[in-house]
Length: 165
Image 1 (tube, rainbow, N blue to C red):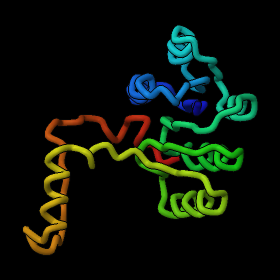
Image 2 (cartoon, rainbow, N blue to C red):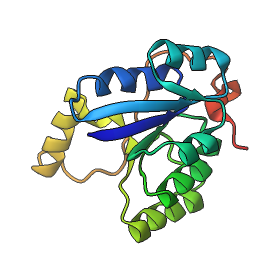
Image 3 (cartoon, one colour):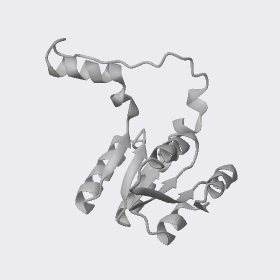
Image 4 (cartoon, rainbow, N blue to C red):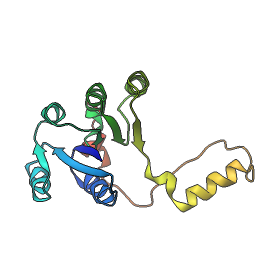
């Protein structure tokens, strides 16, 4: 049985939780979030809740952690979890800088921890098809790829996940 926790328990974390509930070898133990609403949601699902993620990492025996917090916190949270022996799943983006990302990869290698970044779109059927076509050489050498979502996202630069510090 793999004992897991969440740092950040918003919408995407709830989606991951539903997926994990279908995995018999996984059990979610605890959640850390700064939002009282999210902590109440965790309590309602029988999960231990913390307002302080560091306290959760210190007090709980976890095999892995899913980090679904604002990207500005990813580096500190992931490095702390790995130093405590946990494997880490990070929501995208991995960090707010290339240097921090490289440091996390190095730390994961040094500590022999799994470090995974959630890029769900790579499993979409059209993208899998495109990858097969590229691998078979059917469409030639790729010079550039641009992915664009088809809906207007007004105010994205003001959202919590866009903050750099």
